[in-house]
Image (cartoon, rainbow, N blue to C red):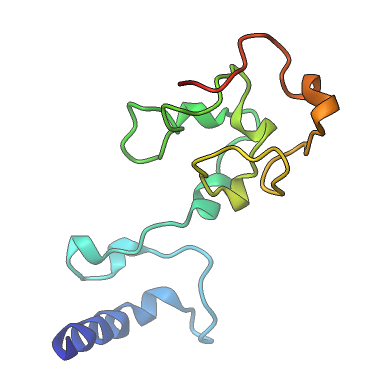
Length: 129
C-alpha cells in the first residue's frame, strides 16, 4: 500500500506543471497529453466540464444512449417518456435513483398528486416493468 501511495505522489508531482500555471493557480482545463504517466492514470474531465461544452440545443440522449459506452444511459426500468432528460433532471446534480420519488428535490417540477398532468402529458408515460 505504501508503494502505491508513493507512486501516486510521484505521478502527481510530475503532473504539477500541467495542473497549475506559473503563479501556482490551478488551470481550468488540464492538458493530459503533457503528463507522462500510464494511460490508466490520465486525468479524466468531470461531467461538469463535458456538459459546459455541449450546445444548449443538444439533447442528453445524443450522448447518454445505450450504444455509447462513454456516457451512462437511463436504466431499463426508467419512466418511459419521449421528453428530454433535463425536463426532470439537472445535469449538475444528476444522481440516478432506483425508484423515482415524486417529492425528491432532485427532480423538477415537484408535482403534487393533483398535478400529474404537468409531467405525465400522455398515457404512454408510465413506469416500465
